[in-house]
Figure (cartoon, one colour):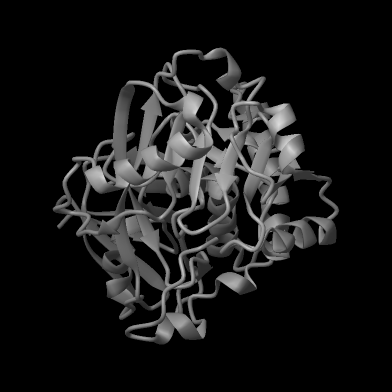
Length: 389
């Protein structure tokens, strides 16, 4: 079998993997190979649509600090590429007082990290955005730096500039095996054996398959999720300069966007899907999921509803605690893995950068201790699950 040598190999070229290939390729005098099992820009995984929410509002300081570095990292890519990848619309987190998600943890985390925000009662939410039909039991947080990460454009930008920096990106190259011996990684894909001194794994729903060569299996659950674009009678209130991204902080949790990418706003239930096999799952929307979303919008945001433009399905790769996995692969010096737990696209560039730092330098300046692959819950065969975040 033909063997080709590279300094670094990236497995998976979705949001995080494309970023890892980009950040590795910026290093001097290195060779980088990215392998993607499907075509670049495919819709079988987690990373491809017009938009994802980006925000500094998070329930733990570790995420807020990482989000601050994420904004810096996206800005660096924008500066090199000349592409706008983040559109700031402001972000509204809202929900019932005493609901399943405690907004005070978000407020406390932002205060701890020096992030400015506003606390809003229901009257102020109704005044600023009259399309919200909320009672006085609802409250919220508004953070002005939140907005839209332009997902498909960001992926294409990472890929284009990785190639400009010399990276080789091969799509339609499913990986057959991964080995580690004598400090060297071997990857067989498409009848070719590749060798490298560093390996970045960003395989999303196929993470356990990539990790199996290291004898690792994590308790991950892959679910089929969906988002819907609607065509309301009046688009003006949902323009990006008038309407923020939003997250409904309760169980079930919903989220949405102003009009962007399609001719109407987008909304979805978070972690509302059912477990699937990523290789055999269908692309048909779930009517029960759609019904829950419509019922929510009819009650709280009725003017966002209208004829359905389209519903897109995607996948979440969920850890039982909904925290990321970002760590070196145990037993290796220069292999690292990132799993986004269904809420990572806003961090895609910085997580790719961290993977590059781990495989090239052996360390990262970011605090990733919360995201250890060896945390207790990931060692359990049937751990308790909590997908609220």
